[in-house]
Structure formats: C-alpha cells, structure tokens
Length: 204
Ligand SMILES: Cc1ncc(COP(=O)(O)OP(=O)(O)O)c(N)n1
Ligand SMILES: Cc1nc(C(=O)O)sc1CCOP(=O)(O)O
Ligand SMILES: [Mg+2]
Image 1 (cartoon, rainbow, N blue to C red):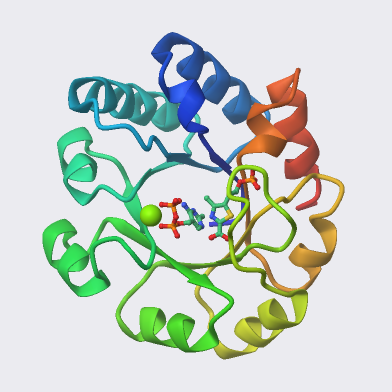
Image 2 (image 1 turned 120 degrees about the horizontal axis):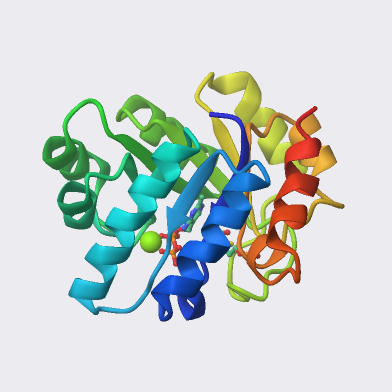
C-alpha cells in the first residue's frame, strides 16, 4: 500500500451520483486507496454507495476501505475497514472479517497504540493530525519526528492524515509515510483529478 489515500467527505456521500463521479476522478488522478467515510445512518444508501465504490475501485485496481463499520465491509464486500479509538476493537474486527480483509488503525500521536495495533494484526497504522484540519478541527496533533520513530519500529504501511495537501506532504513521505490520506485537499478541489495527481506525483 503506497500512494494517495482519498477519503470521502460526508456531505458528498449525501449525493451518490456526485460521490461516484468525484471518486472516479480521484482514481483517475492516481488514488490507490479510497475510504468511504459517511457519518450518516441511512443504511440503504450507504450499502448501495459502498457496493458501487467497490466496483469502481476494482476497475482502477485500488482498495476500498470503509470507515467505522465492520458489518458494511462484509455486506458490500469491501477490501477492509478503518477503526479509531471509539470504534470496534481490533480483535473483534479481525474475528468478524477474517484474515484477508484489511484493517487500518488510528494511532493519533501514540507509538504505544501503534505497537499494540501492530502486534494485534493491523494492516496499516494511521498517525495524525499533521496539520490543522477543517474536516476534523479537534484532532490531536502529531509530528514528523513521531512518524520517523514509527518507521524504525515497524514495517507495516504507515499512513499520515490531517490537513495534508500536495504541497505539504513531501516531508511526511520522506519521514516514512507510505500513504497520504486527505479529504479536503482532494474532494474540495475544483479539479479533483488534477488534485489527486498532484499528491500521486509526490510518490515519484
Ligand atoms: C486513514 C485514516 N486515519 C485516521 C482516521 C480517523 O479515524 P477515527 O479516529 O475513527 O475518526 P473518524 O474518521 O471515524 O471520525 C481515518 N478515518 N482514516
Ligand atoms: C478523519 C480524520 N482523522 C484525523 C486524525 O488525525 O485521526 S484528521 C482527519 C480529517 C482529515 O481530513 P483533511 O484531509 O480534510 O484534513
Ligand atoms: Mg472512526
């Protein structure tokens, strides 16, 4: 797993045709992972969108990760789930999803949490927020030095998130980030494909 990790804004999820058009643009621009992050509870719409996103991601050989919702991963046959501190625990999620689905874990600014997630069988570790984020203004802040420390302690893919743009992500990649996750930097752009391509270029 390496490259741009594009995360959908909830507002866009309310309009499935626009969501699919926007995600298709991000994928054409080179996004390698897509996270369906929809904080609403409209199960029918969420399931239909997740299924359509899986088909779209397959077409681009990209991975579809579902935010928070392990059961939706199974229903939509997505590639995996992203779990934070308030979500289902890693042990229970692994037992529900089996060995082949991906599980990403939020570590915020904690190497201890990263170690526990790694030992518990996570597939990638997410650190953040590296910059102020309008999507999540209250996110804890993480540093580039923390990412460097994580890099020497694990070979799992490391994901950096929080206020990351194509212009500020290079030092994070140099510090060891395999995945750069972004919401606003991709989906608030007037030209989503070009925005995604600008991130993708940073991976060389
Ligand atoms: C790639 C990635 N990293 C971190 C998060 C944050 O997850 P979480 O702390 O569970 O917060 P919510 O996204 O659920 O509000 C993420 N979603 N993706
Ligand atoms: C969903 C999320 N989690 C974060 C964390 O630090 O765990 S920051 C964040 C929001 C990322 O959106 P943007 O790219 O618009 O800042
Ligand atoms: Mg969560």
